[in-house]
Image (cartoon, rainbow, N blue to C red; front, side, top):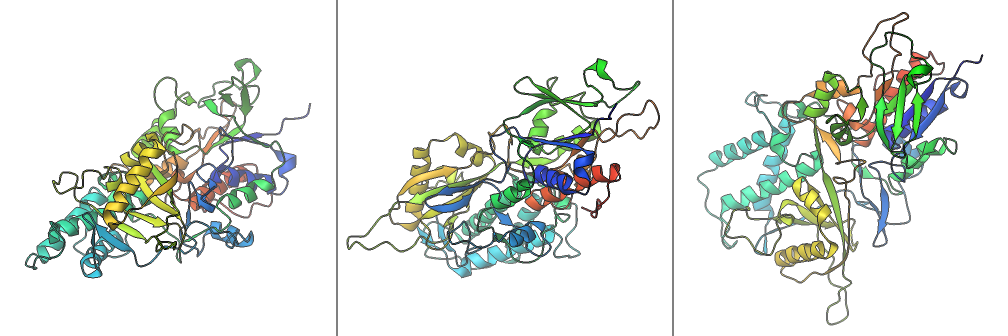
Length: 519
């Protein structure tokens, strides 16, 4: 009788899943050793990477930036694929646009002398929290990044309390303006981290997060070009779309051998799909989002049967996972009375009164007050972009296009004192998509980097040997939320997929495994 090849099933065709599949399939001797399958619940590959088109421009609905190019595997792949150059314009092709125009509610343009001191303060405080600067007076007693930032602002005010009031900004006092500028930077930081409220972002863990050195860039031919390259080596049929997993049955304890009579065949893991079909496997690499895992550990009808061990469920519960959405709007092709195009739209930073202030412009919607900017996706583009995090990101998903267009138009028109019209809108909906349930992870207050390590541990934990031993490495975990220092990023997802593929290759003593579990 010919022995069955070990079957490896990867759940999810995003960066982590396809990196693992690519590594396993291309490793020496793979075809003679394993059966491999990637099951994806959606109708496309890419996961939280989704390159699209809007207003004639290439845009990213999900992952956008390569965060540092020195040492980044994503940048290296993009270079090898010649994906960093394109004849077609693309989102953020100019990098981070310089020289923003900062407008305060009421139509007041704020000069550098007002904006820069607060911006410098905010950057310095974030550098402290991220471990880039060290000072004796900064300690790790802060519970959250939000608390630390606000204490820093209070200390700043105490040090400059005898300054003169500013004039020419209507009802704005100096302190109100500085607080609003600071809040603008907090809104931007919330989109960087996905923490809808920075008071939920752990201070101690912030310094563990690592960015690659060098500039941050976007991919000219789209992030999807990386995904397509990873998938291109896999044979037709290996990736199965529309195969949403509803249950993962596994064997944490084995008191007797796992044989045909218990419904698993000779394989210890059984996957149940939404269409009622099943599939058995020796090893399953789970790459679903932390949001799906959070939903999957709840109640008797959870994703795993039996439930995951407490060390795993507690890590899943403690870690933060937020919603960040992008809003694209297209400018109306307006002309002045001489038939000439209006001046190009600026990189607009927006400074608003607090929500409880009587000085607010009543027609500016609350959700627009919690975004920091509206700006062209590249110089001279008619497509503008705003980022939203937390409750306003979820609100955006529920709103009709007409309501969004009106809210953006009212806000921008009131700030620029010039009527601005928009004709089309496109938004991401990561929060309500059941395959993602959010955007990316962060280390919440009460959590730590150790929880990210716990996320990466395979199951079962048992190290027993002999007749009653559990089949090893039944469930492995990959994805950005399983990487201690590169969580929330595509390269974190990449490293995690490589890590779990190498774990299996090492387990089977495969020749040609050059990368160990260093990632």
